[in-house]
Image 1 (cartoon, rainbow, N blue to C red):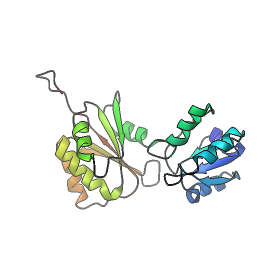
Image 2: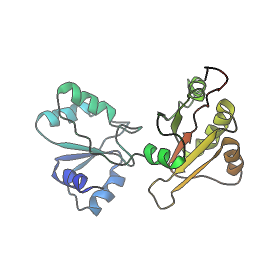
Image 3: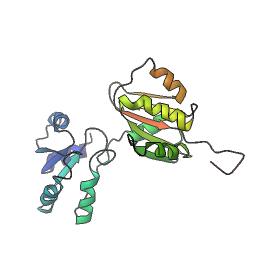
Image 4: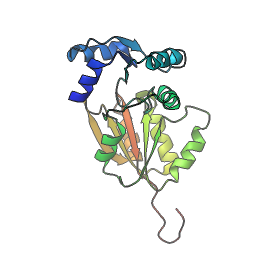
Length: 215
């Protein structure tokens, strides 16, 4: 937390939080008594007009998420888009987002990268893999612990078993772990190790074929 973030949360009229149970602990720690309301993927459409009315009336509202930055694979895009359309000023306070420290710590190329986020669970998943496998730059995925093995198998299938993969989990927390290995080695590790926590998967881009102009 920055001094600026604490100041903004203390001075605004309302805080919208992805999970009020989680955020209330943070607010209590910094002695922030601003009213708190839930804003998540299941109610963001329903309460959007109500939020816009409050903003039009002159209230200042802050949006926070459980981890990372609102709008980056988290609720936030919808309300920001509508605020911009309505001419309501939006200010983003720079803060943590999991993809940047994962990329920096992976040891992979950072001059260009592609952020995919969460892959579709079913429809369109194979076509996304076919696209990602051909990218010449590093690409970044978000994945849940119970699907990480499936994801690694798909990396091996579509990108090749030797493709370098970094799994960064629990970033900035007590049990942070960031390891880069070939996909096939990760699959061997998962036979004995049960990975837990929030995960970012960073995958090496496809090497250019030096004997041709194709990727």
